[in-house]
Length: 180
Image (cartoon, rainbow, N blue to C red):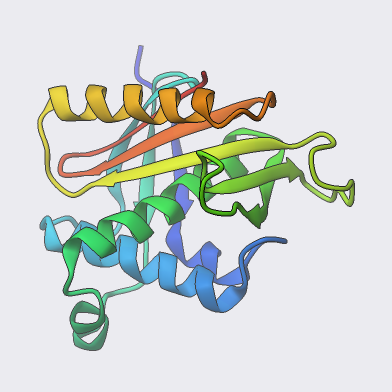
C-alpha cells in the first residue's frame, strides 16, 4: 500500500506561531530551502517521515532560493540547524494539535515549548517539549545515533512533560520523530 502524501509548505513559516515571529519564521523557511537546494532537490521533493507520526511521505514545497539567501546561509551547519527547526515546526503543526508556544531557555534539554493551538495556559500547563536536530548529509547510523541523543537529552532535562525529538536529514530528505 502506498503511503499518504501530504504537503509541507516552507513558506507557511512566514506566518509565525505564538512563539515564532513571522520574521524568524522567514529565516527558518530560507534556511530549509537553501539546504534542500544545496543537496540538489527542488520544490515538491518527497521527504520520508518515520517514527511517532507513522511512516508517511510529505511533499516539501518552497519559493525559489535567491543568491542572497545562499550567501546568507553559506554556513551549511547553521543552515541545517535552522532549516531543521522549520521542518520540525511544520511537522508538529500538521500532525498534532500543538504549535510552538515559546523558545526554551538554554540548559532545559529542549528547543521549544509546545502548546495546544489557541491555548493561553501558563507555562507547564498542557505543554510539551520539542528538541530538534538537523543533518545535511549523513548515514543511517548517524540519523539513529542523533535520534537516541535527542531523546536522551529530553529525558535528562528534568521536565516531566511529554516531548518530541525530531531529526531532519536533508539528503536524502527524511524526518524522524521520536518520543521519550
